[in-house]
Length: 176
Image 1: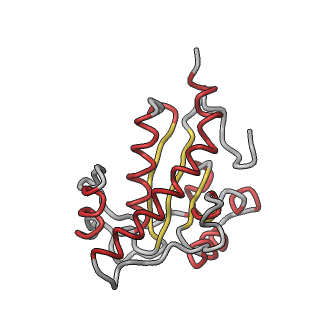
Image 2 (image 1 turned 90 degrees about the vertical axis):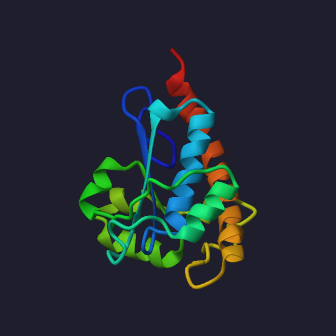
């Protein structure tokens, strides 16, 4: 196990959940990008990616149309996404819970059952040294399509940095 506390990838999949406010903009972007990174590396069977929101006001809805468009423009597909709320009872099933901003991080840590659960919560931008000082991925919901593209760029860069940190442990588990 490394500092992120992932399980042995040879026995159970590494489970990561990306969390934003309503689960229709930022967290579906991150989940889509990260899923595609995992698939491109041929590690699908070793990683389970999901997303959720801290709020329940969009549960069951599709991702925002601007999220879907921004992702499609970059070759990702989130058309099957349906929003859900993060369930604190599922902390034990995750190896990593990635918050998109500090408000989500605070909420998730307050929902955590113990220090082990709290230690699973990390800010997405903390994995990307070039963006770590920014800390929060801005919420594009009340903005325009250009902001969605900009936010997706930030998320893509940080997801790549996160994947590169996890990839050695994942590929070790993938070898026969």
